[in-house]
Length: 450
Ligand code: NDP
Image 1 (cartoon, protein in one colour):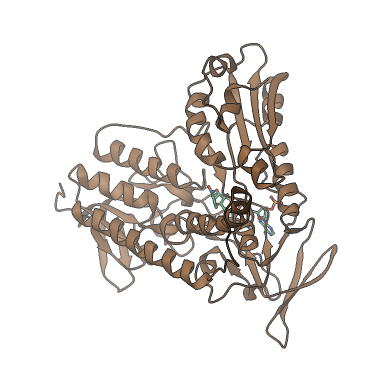
Image 2 (image 1 turned 60 degrees about the horizontal axis):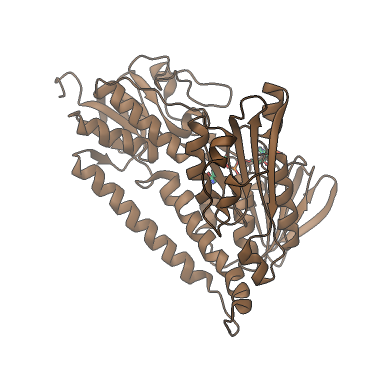
């Protein structure tokens, strides 16, 4: 398809979820495509995010499963956990996936360039090795990176990037932040036996989720032994003579730990990309500003995924990459619907949500009907685990249309994926009620809400 004016029809910067999908689909439509990646093909999700994190979540859950197994008749003598075995197996699987993503691109004849790429002109890209290439269309899919607040000693902390590679488990870990990553890693390290303290600048965990779920997670996490410090701003981190970290913060005593993990948000990767050479506009948070077709203010330059700071979720980036390729190379203009996106936090236990929280619904619609089920899953009852699940359905008062579903409890993310289809389709509470329960399950609570 290349017309000879440019080296490539499409040059993609960043081989993460969005970039890989866009490259593959555009190449499938016959475009001559190259993708540049400075780290590893697969991006955050595959290499140091969702995928390895979920494997650690599975690994961590065995701690409770082995405990709970006793009441189910199993005798398990002094189980031991070896971090290096799990870590190395996870990293091995990451290598496998990295290979699989690379093969997919190669099978579609996408040229993979393992170098950093920067824009040096509207159609010009300069690679880390010094080579300059040109492209008719450019897609920026450089993702985001962990934000680390700046204060004395903050460089002594790590981020989720490094958490997957730790030589040993820290006996005491301070996790900064109260969002997705903080709660997920708090659950993981706590199950592995580390003493976990979450330190957050506000008094809220998981801003954006329904308050009833957030309260339940907090209560369960405290019961499991995780400490919380709220309304704390960091002052400093100092390394002590014995190699520990002394953390000083407002409103609380100093805390001595072995590791500080920053989980304080992620910022779009736009620094040093040379956007100014092509005249690409960025927003207040450094994000690339795009329209509904993921097009920037420069007609032939597009951006998808976390770098646009729309919704920082892998499946969204993938859809944006697909829609971009269909639109620009498949003669099939498509946009991505960013409404009603289900999400989950893989905490212990996980929580999941789709649609509006109760307070969002009340602010938007006024009176709403809320149905709740607060129950102890059967497995927890027999295990002697006093941990309750909470399901919540928010409905429009007059029509009964479901505006949101919120769940915390075992397998809530798995259950939510199916429930989200119904919410997205605009079903009502009555239609849920007409569906016969599968008994005994936790999910049946969704069709039995009173
Ligand atoms: P989140 O946005 O979820 O949470 C950030 C936390 O850090 C908040 O508690 C916030 O506090 C705090 N914070 C933000 N800025 C600062 C600062 N300057 N100093 C101190 N504290 C600060 O970010 P994460 O890093 O946990 O995750 C990044 C994104 O990655 C998520 O938003 C999500 O989109 C995605 N992700 C998704 C996952 C999933 O789908 N399961 C898993 C992991 C990540 P406060 O709210 O009090 O202001």
